[in-house]
Structure formats: structure tokens, C-alpha cells
Length: 378
Image (cartoon, rainbow, N blue to C red; front, side):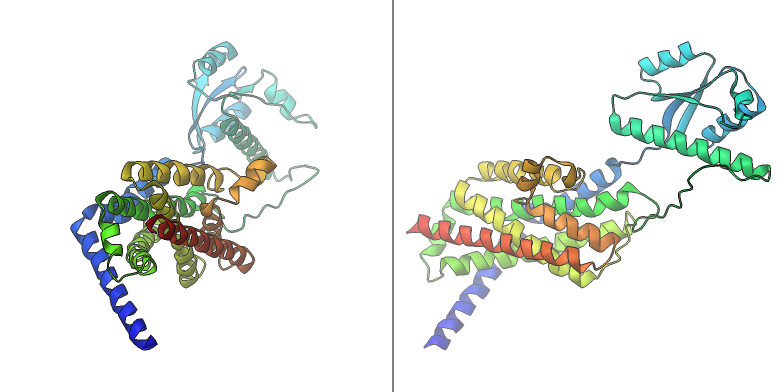
């Protein structure tokens, strides 16, 4: 008797999954959400968002031209970090800074060449526009780096060693080229798939609630659990296709190295998708309206994921209250996993706790959906 029930349940589930796939084929909006939206968003954000600062507009002022000033200014002009323009006076350069034509001024005083030969060296003045604090810090760092490199090159050309009290031997791990794109694109995969996974189930379930087809389905022998499983299997398959597409674009289009295991990434992505689909099911069960469900999915998942997942803003730098709130954001855990797997490899100390958190959140949202659906229909 039990085997007959199990066989009947399996047949009903198979039929429900087939029904969902037929609905997906007949309604191309789900396919567009799963494949076209991540493609569009990844290309848009991948090329549009960058934390690198190249070709910073800088004004160069040399009060007394000399071979030394010409050599140093030529070093700045040859750097891809700066887009330089010469100014004859500080007043002219300051006017350019006020008008926003340059972000900084490098000022070499008249006695630059003479002071350069003194034991304590020659100071250079750097005036930076501090409205954008991040760009101001980058500009200061780039000018300082160019100055130290020029001094070292100048000392080497004279067969001397640069006399500095401390020599920093710098090594950069995991992202040796220090490209922000390598850090941002894996995070984008998590942010985009948070929106896609949530929208897929939120809109589809809400549509069925609006049309009354879900209630009609529940008067059949199919249980609520079988109905939910049928939707989860179908949209999990669709979401997995979208996830694979974004990972392939990250590797082949943006050149981000995937140093970790692909299968470990796939396993963690599966947990993440289940949590995202669960959020969508929960939203649609509570809202039962496509417009409201769509608004909640975007405002309630995408924006918190964008701001509080650690994708751009460092979580450790946030106030402790906000840090506590970030633990409720599903994308926080997947951002940490994908950035680690892409750039550092299989670091289990990072992957395992975050994967466990994803599993707990997936179980929580699925459980809430099951209880609320069952309760509303009784």
C-alpha cells in the first residue's frame, strides 16, 4: 500500500515538473529573467563598475624648469594612472582644480633642483580635491609611488642606492595585478543571481495566485508539498542555467581566474539558489500579487544584497549594528564563497561556514513557504 502511494506521488511530481517546464516554454518571460537579465546586468555592471583609478586628471606646475623637474614630470606624464596637463602658475592650476578640470596639482617649487641635492631631499607639494575621499586617497598614493620610483630610478642611474630607513618588500596574494574587476565580477554573480532567483519564483507563484490556477491545482490529489517541489525543481533547473551562464561570462568574457573547484562552486551555488528560490516563494505566498511581489523582490533582496553583502562595501568597516543585520542577507554568504573560490581556491575555513549558513537559510524559507501555503488554503 505504501509503495503504491509512493509510486503515485512520484508520478504526480513528475507530471507537475513537466507542467512547469511546459509553462516556462509557453511563457518566455521566465527564460528572459533566467538568461537575458543576468547577461545584461553582468555586462553592464562588469564593464561599468570599477574601483580602479586610471587617467586621473592632474595639473603639473614647475616654477623653475630644469632637467630634474623635466625628468620627474615626464615620469608622471608617462604613467597610465595620470592624464596630465601643464600649468604655468599655481593660480592657473588652482583655478582648474576649482572648476573640476583636474583632481590634483603637483607643484615643484623654484628651488626643487637645489634641494634635491641636499641630504634631506626635496619636498613636492601635492594638492588634492578631497570631495571624493576615495579618489583623493588613490591620487595621493599614486603620486607618492611615482615619486619614490623616480627617486629609486634616479639613484640607480647614478650607481647609488636610495637611502631610506625602511624598505618595503611588497607581495600581493590572490590578485597580484590588483584589478578591482577580479574582485567585483564574482560578487556580481552573487548579487545578480539573488535578484534572478527571487524573481523567478516570486512572479510565477504570484501569477498563479492571481489567476486562481494554484487553488485549482490543489483540489487535485496533488499535495501542497508536491506542488512546491514541482516548482522548485523546474525553477532550480532554470536558475542553474543562469548561474552557469554568469560563471562562464566571468571566466571567458572578463578573464577572472577560477582557482577553486568547479564542483564545489556548483554545490554552493545550488544551496544559494535554493535559498533565493525559497525567498521568492515566501514573498509570493505572502503577497499573492505580481506587482507587489516584484517590488518586494527588488527592494527587499537586491538592494540589501548590493549594499550589505560585502560586494563593494567592507562589512568589517560598518557599525556593529549594521554588521549584525548583514547576517540576515543571503548574498553575504555567497559573495564570500564565490570571491574565495574564484581568487584564492578551495579555502574550506571560508567555504564551509558560509555554505552551512546558506543551507540553514534555504531550509528556513522553504519551511515558511510550506507552512504559510498550507495555512492559507485550509
